[in-house]
Image (cartoon, rainbow, N blue to C red):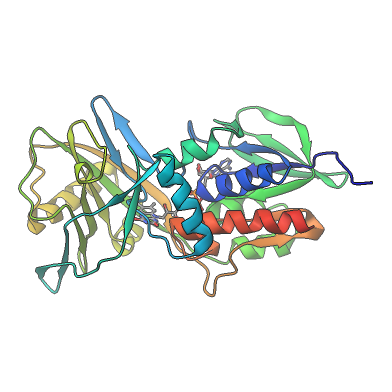
Length: 329
Ligand SMILES: Cc1cc2nc3c(=O)[nH]c(=O)nc-3n(C[C@H](O)[C@H](O)[C@H](O)COP(=O)(O)OP(=O)(O)OC[C@H]3O[C@@H](n4cnc5c(N)ncnc54)[C@H](O)[C@@H]3O)c2cc1C
């Protein structure tokens, strides 16, 4: 007779990888709890909101190549969660501007990039403001402890870590070396982000721009994306190299240098209201990509963008494919 007792899985991290894994596990009949340290789901696909304004300050858009991901993307489009974005993109290199010749399809969540996380989380058991700080193997199961609540009551048959590599490494310090080694195998660079709000649209010839060889690597007008109302807001990302070398700067000093670079590139933010965000672990991935890691003998799985190319599509696929693997165990 088929065992009908639902297996319990804990997923740590409510970024797109963790949510993709959790939604598919739930669809496969598992009982899933997702633990997230922040106030909301989405992780690095997030949108900063203030009074009368919003700005995507993590992932800016995504592309889709894999058939599985395209299938999911189509359902997001049908449900009004995602739309195509057709910006006029500039490229700055070797000291001059040109128009981008790429005709790649770019997609954004609407009305902000965090909408996909909210949508995926809507039917999940999501525990917010829970920073998991200990993983405790007990009688062939897992128990968790969080910074906010101490030892949690529930026990789980399987554990999924859906965190940036350095955060997974910190959490698995007390576990066998085999687990540690994987999480320690990749370095992730930080990213300083400026969000600039203007009273009127500033003069700049593009909706978005890739910048090479400068302190800044990306400039984007949020209102060029579909369904973005509110105050005129622009997102500026520092390059991975500059961010990593300057990750410990004060926000004021980082902002001064980034705004000076923006002005040099033609975006004058001197009249804008400025907010800053520092992503400590923004980008980095293992090459060749294993897609996900499953360690059946520890009843543990690891997923995330860093195991599959470092972008939104890879993160979603990493979580989804780990869920398929867990079902086979
Ligand atoms: C500035 C920036 C720009 C980017 N631009 C693009 C882009 O244009 N296109 C693109 O495709 N990709 C882009 N990316 C990459 C993209 O955002 C990521 O690939 C993707 O969002 C990663 O998802 P994830 O689920 O693997 O990780 P994350 O989104 O990082 O999710 C991990 C989650 O775990 C939580 N967490 C961490 N530690 C704990 C703990 N101890 N307990 C509980 N919860 C914990 C975190 O709060 C987070 O919510 C960008 C990223 C950044 C930072």
